[in-house]
Image (cartoon, rainbow, N blue to C red; front, side, top):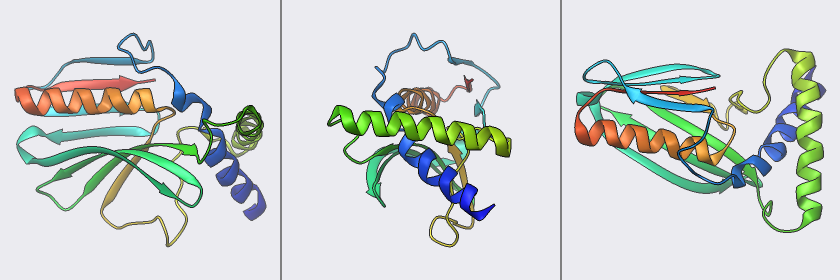
Length: 172
């Protein structure tokens, strides 16, 4: 079980990269963004649901950083409450380089998918935590498949907060 989980984690980390180079556009058929309940921003994602009162948001950010051989693209929502919310997508370092790296990532994605199927999880959207390194108290985490979906989350959140109007984004 530990070997399968480790393989899934590694393969998932490497395999998530190719789709992150997808063009960011508003024609993404997997994403809908619409007005919603007044005073709240909502997200429906494969990994769960999130709702926050617009009046409780103190900052939002979108940034990228590297950790353990991967690039993490992340949107953070900080509130006046105790929890920090992270939406993120992963890609392997150097993934945009050679075709060899892309081939390795594609093969890793296949393996992660097969292992995930056997374990009953979606390797592309399951949050990856390595205790105690990536497990943080009071952190709500959601993983998306690609950077384009992450950009849509940030745009929806930013528009909702700036306009002080409720919005709901759904990513399939």
